[in-house]
Image (cartoon, rainbow over all chains, first blue to last red; front, side, top):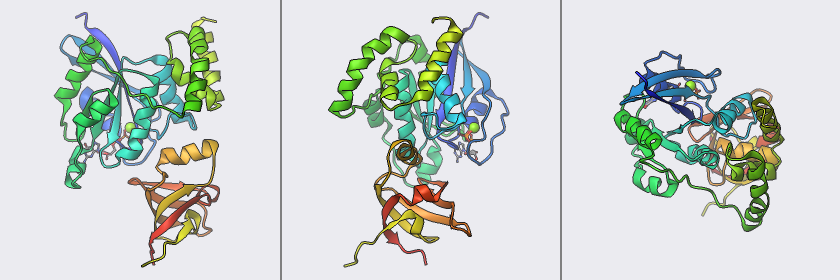
Amino acid sequence: MGNEYYRIALVGNPNTGKSTLFNALTGLRQHTGNWAGKTVSLAQGSVDFKNKTFQLIDLPGTYSLFSNSKDEEVARNYIAFEKPDVTLVVLDATSLERNFNLALQVMEMTTNVIICINLIDIAEKQGIEIHEKRLMNLMGVPVLKISARNKLGFPMLLDTIDRIVNGDIKCQSFQLKYPEEIEKKILKIEQQIHEIIGDTVSARWVALRILDGDESLINEITKQFKLRGDY
Amino acid sequence: MTRTKIIKLVDGEKGDIIKITALLLDGVMRRRLLDLGFVNGAFVEVAQKSPLGDPIAFRVSRTTIALRKEESGKIEGELIINGE
Ligand SMILES: Nc1nc2c(ncn2[C@@H]2O[C@H](COP(=O)(O)OP(=O)(O)OP(=O)(O)O)[C@@H](O)[C@H]2O)c(=O)[nH]1
Ligand SMILES: [Mg+2]
């Protein structure tokens, strides 16, 4: 009765186990298979924890959030404009270099991030050792090792989500520093962007995307503001 | 002493393992390839060539990804293992 309600988004590269994690936590039977890009519409399901309800949203797997495809656009728009309370980035423990690329992009967009290093059972079999505490210090957000298929690490994950929405854990998501020349340009337009869009979306991120010539994002922002009747 | 041989991914044969040394393209296409894991230093295996040679499937960062000639022709690397 009267549970507090929070939205938790799952993002990650294709085939990293997002749907498996989603199903295991929510008890839903969303189809999972073994090919990339099969999650098309957004599955939603909930899990109760303490006095809260976490509404999980299973986003399509993508390598990037720069909107080169419909899937990327769906994932990007959800994180940027629907503003989930917490975003879980699900990484493949055996392929961290590429997977962190997406994690860094997410951390540029939003603050409340948990990095879930999944498939830890396979990594261990391959002799891959992951120092999650060190990663946590570097990233400024919780980093947890999990195995979605074996349901390992779930209590810690739910507890971490709970602490973030409570405000007991304050994420300080790591921000990539760009070359001086680009940082100067960001500074120049970031303030103006903030005046226009307010706190809805990270102004630094929008500045970066504009400098990169990302017209699709500008169009989307215009559309979003019209929808909301702010402009 | 073995001489290192630099080739373009497009010229790789099935089974070759190539360590990427350069991406000779810019903009969105460069970004896309980086996102897919075609970064400097990454090891790429030529997984499959279609009869006409386009696209070619590569194994990179534990995933199989098919690239068109326009892309694989612009990625250079050191031939580490000759597949034949
Ligand atoms: N060994 C092992 N396999 C896992 C684990 N988690 C997921 N898998 C397997 O990985 C495969 C992909 O899982 P999915 O949950 O479909 O991956 P996804 O991230 O939803 O994929 P997309 O929706 O395509 O992005 C499935 O065969 C899962 O059974 C894990 O912790 N350990
Ligand atoms: Mg899925």
